[in-house]
Image (cartoon, rainbow, N blue to C red; front, side, top):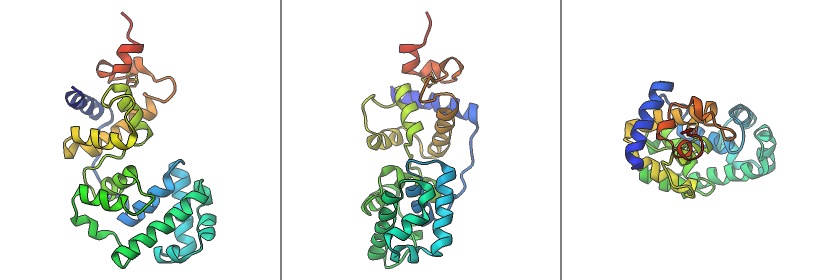
Length: 222
Ligand code: SF4
């Protein structure tokens, strides 16, 4: 049921928002650190924090070896610096210990499952962050379930109401063909920002309404 519904949703999102062509956003390590910095803040703030971090230290090796307090000062503009600074240092240390360096290009030759498992073993890296590295840097079909993807998927009935965001990654990915993952992700984010907002979704303007559980339960006028 949800699997057939997601096909309709995917096609309607493409018709509404277009099919974006994939392009690499950053190298895998920059994507990983940038995604950690993006947690619970805006793109503008996290981009600024990443820029400050690289300007201050100049290399990932220098960040790895720096005191946590100095990292926290450099990323202050991204918020939650006291949480993110030790996480970044720990992740860089773990990568160095496991690979002997700070370069994640070897992941290009790994499949999705192996890459996810390895990234999530680093500590402080969850399924969403791992999926961002896979999708945006490596061009592999992993779906990051952010707040928009999670909310819109629940309202549509693509995932059960009380499923965790962690579990939603697997459920949604299993229903999508590999080449659908990237445009589906971007379409759901665009839809969540413009129409299916957290508060007062604009259901009467929504192209997905005929396929939406929330609409049929709460909005549809008979
Ligand atoms: S009908 Fe309403 S709740 Fe359903 S996807 Fe559209 S905006 Fe969201």
